[in-house]
Structures are given as structure tokens and as C-alpha cells.
Image (cartoon, rainbow, N blue to C red; front, side, top):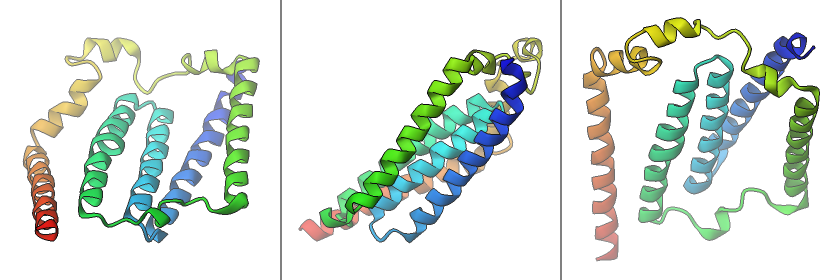
Length: 184
């Protein structure tokens, strides 16, 4: 019975997380505070990771969370705070009772959805959905799931990967240099 609702489940959540990603991206580009904008960008990254999970790309989803929403956003927030670009009055994005009420309603809707799915047995049936590749192919391939993603990254795209790391390092060094000139 739970398997007949799986296509509806995936379709609903695809549009839900797509809408969340679009709305958070719009809010991200409209923020005046760089700290608030960075936090909204984390919401976009998490919504994209959820879309990757729905597409059976769990490794890419975890890398999205760990690398982008985790490491790069921490570095970005560190640089922003080091430069002291944000003011404490700009950090509160949800102002007034209407913003808090909307956040509470969204939280209650997500909790009700989780309870409805667990009561209907749909959560236990999610992992039985047909994956993009049969598990025997994933296990038989050298490197498992990570090999097909890592091989092009460190072969064809190695130069772009290294240039990105040097660019991030240069940005951090520049931010530290700017911060030292202000404090001196």
C-alpha cells in the first residue's frame, strides 16, 4: 500500500524543495546584511541537497552539505565577521509576530507530514524504491559510489579544482590583510 504513494511522495517533495530553494535564493539576494544572506544561502544548499537525495544521488547530497553548506559557508561567515560587515540589528531576519507565526506554521506542517508518513508506513518503503543503478553494479564497480564521482574530479577537472582552492585561499588572505589594516 505504501509503494503506490511513492511517486506522489517524490513529486510532492521535488516541488516542495524546489520551491524552498527558489524562495530562499530570492531572499538571499535581497538581504542587506551579508551574514543573513549567507545563512539564507545555507538554506538554498540544504534544499538542493534534498533534491539530490530525491534523485538517488546521496553522495552528491552529502558533499553538498559538507563542502558547500558546511566548510565554504563557515569560511565565508568567518571572513564576513572578520571584516565586521554585519551589524547586530541586521541579523534578525524574522521581525515581528507574523514572521514567527509563519515559521511556526511551516514547522508544524513538516512535523505533521513526518508523522503522517511514519503512521502510513511510507518511510519504511522509501528505501525499497528502485535506485538509479542496481546495487550489484554499484558494489561491483571499483570505488563503489565515490569512484565515478571522484575520478573525473581528480583527472579531467583537477586544474579547476586546484584553482578554486587557491582562489579561496587568496580571498581569506585578502580578508585578513584588510582586517589588519582597519585594526592598526
